[in-house]
Length: 278
Image 1 (cartoon, rainbow, N blue to C red):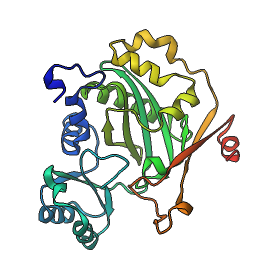
Image 2 (tube, helix red, strand yellow):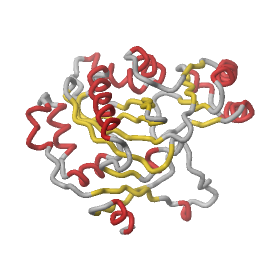
Image 3 (cartoon, rainbow, N blue to C red):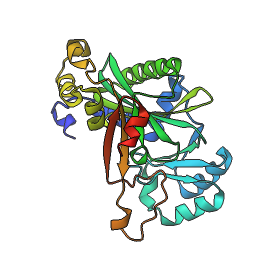
Image 4 (tube, rainbow, N blue to C red):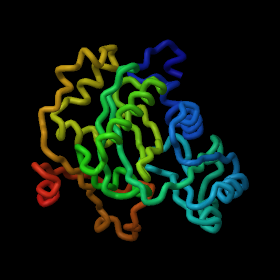
């Protein structure tokens, strides 16, 4: 409504936000771009969701649009779990089509934080410790990557460039991907800052928020070249912090809904040194 009133939106425009945050539109766009995504379909009712999950094949992820911290996202392994899920969901869940993804088991999940001016992109690739299925906010992660091959890192960077341009992302953005059998699958695109931006800013020594603000105001990434040089060259690890002891009765099982309430960070010349500091 604000944009329709003539107010200029800085950074990524509302059309870009909708295309990325609407799970159905996002999956359609990624498929149209020829990128590898998990097999997917969508449902507009409880009956259709139950039928489509069975047709796609378990396990599957059920993913409503426009959610934060994985709220409403659930991994189901059989038809009975789908029925249990449907008992608790409100009718408003189907105000928009609900996306159903085939779950990629035993894959390495990757967070890609990006700075973009809409045409050019600088990417930062974080490698998660936990496999797919655990929310990225609840996973240990390391920067720079320790296990991903140089060729896959180059491919991930190229995908980030392609996606940021196609989705017209300006400022900060985030892409989540999974690697299975040396194949990269794009899981989701977020045209906004992720929770790992403070961690990355400390890990690299790059003032990411300052640069993103200038990009949102119209600067180009090339103009920021001197500010984009990494000044820290050690290994940084992010550790999630949980408050299970302060929230009695809460399940401690990790999954697609974020449960951590904070994070800590350690650095070292090696990943072993960094981990030993926790």
